[in-house]
Image (cartoon, rainbow, N blue to C red; front, side, top):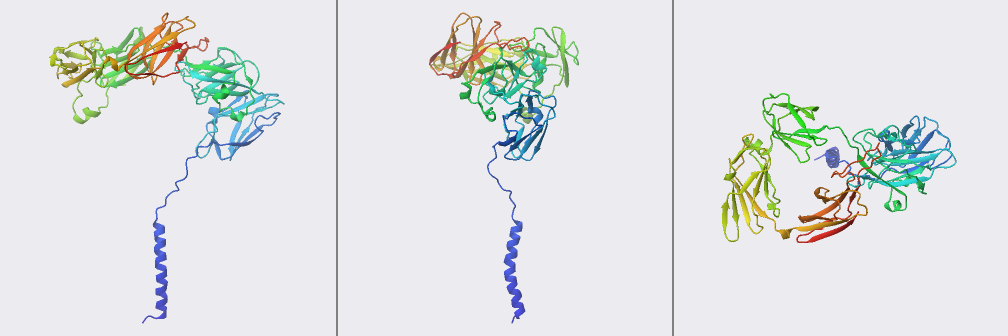
Length: 567
């Protein structure tokens, strides 16, 4: 029989064990971080400021901007611009939800100051910027209230430019943007629009700049620039400064617009833009301009030995060189018109990947064809382009099988190389869209300069029928025929498909086109050299005018399309 004390302990254990097990389970549970809500994409909001925005008669030395959340300054040196400029930059600090700007310089009397902080003010959690921020006040009884609006586009593509600086100067000295920061500045929005507020009356020089080093000056050769040929004058526009950067297209339509085209300045110095081993044994050298009399000297290969087999592109600005007597590192002296441009030092080995790596065997001589999805263009020859120059060949070994509705016949096709280094092989025949063809290339019928041969292969050919194409023509109407016009046919991605130069004629026929969507571009060829020319800032030369047709044209099979374009 159990004593009373034993019964008491048993009762305690019955109560304790479940509690202990529960506590143990809780202690062993996996701790998971809170998943949180959606990502914060809301920028900080300014609640108040001392002095208030657009205030007058300011005579203090400190500006405080109060926001609705904790903030920080992100590269203020990149964005900060004060107009008119101060001799000494202010001290800017963050205190909780506030930006405190302490002025180290005395302010001019009766002057409107505009503090441009760009995207420097961001929230502390997600770095959402208080975008393109401006703050203005006046030291006198009045605040300048004039505005200027417009847009910035790329001079050649005609696309809007985002993030370009638009700068105003009260001095019209040609070189001023290269030496001094502007009086007023803003940045273009996503759609290339801009607006400057709180401007004083007067005439200004307007300059747009893609500022590569964030110093508000045009001083890098890679920076794009644009300018208004005439002086600009701001207009009155009663707007809230806090809304200046939400530039609406509807608002711009009611205002005086300044349109500026950005362009790269011409670089007259010939130079090598790129040199690389583009494929096994192939060196590619790209030049800034077409070369007329290039020279190459391999410094670590004997002069008596050839260093490469050379091929130039159609523009004569890019060399492909298949290397011979290959050292581990090639040292190549490059000259133009007898003047040494540079010395290239480049490792010639290329990492082996793909089939050659897995098999351990050399990659055979490969080629591409002029076929598109196995189809040959209407009345077009067949072109085979080999990756390496061909050294020895037996073209009589090639066989072409013609399969018609009536029978099948095999012949030796007419084939010839079209270039001096034997890389492009042209196969001609009176192709018929109703027939099917098979070109057989036997193994060992061709060897390249590295003694590699192609595998035995068959090329299946069928010519596209004429009724599978569409036709497209454009009639150009010009009010002034002072210069030729280059009319370009473009793909949807802006690549040039075809181009014609219009002088006296009006109709441009692009002939048979594969069904697709196309665009049109017109270049006013002012100097008649057959290409687009950029501008020159110091000489006040604008780039040649480019127009892009607003419509996209869809060419259908067995359909003719004609467009009238008034230029």
